[in-house]
View (cartoon, one colour):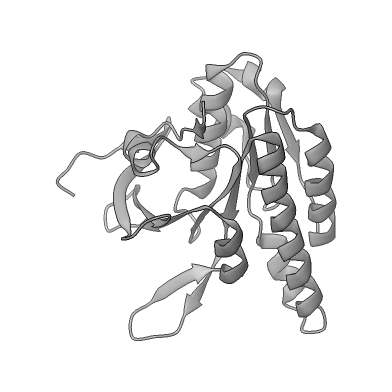
Length: 229
């Protein structure tokens, strides 16, 4: 298995089967676009497929809901025994957690989620006296994650917060977008639509042209949306 599926057919088709093991992938979007649900769907599917598998989750935004994961897993609470969770409280602690996890990861296909990689960074970088140092540290963290992904054949999935771009039409981009795009082999953007609970996923990298699919946020996780949209 060289990919970590999301469990949502249109997104998996868009990704060529899922997120690659051995690489860093970025999922970004505004609040409530489904970033954490997508990450949980990846983790749940992986643990259900292999009774010996483990998954690693850095919950930097403190948004991981274990009841929600159990809901996605059809009520199977036993999966939680194989999910290792860290909740750093500041950016420095997040860096320490990322470095420590590298020694714990098995040398096999394992998901490592960092949700989000820029939440605590954003708080730290907001201080002009620390911006340069914080950017340097984030670059180091992302490089370390890329090394870890390759060395341990882990599927490293990081989620990213966004900031608004000034222009004629409202747009957003990932916080620290240059660093995130540089280190991420796959970049997936999630957006809300005019239809309640329906979201749009756009593959921005790798792609000669951006391609999009739609999906629904449901109690079971992510669901396919029938065309026409």
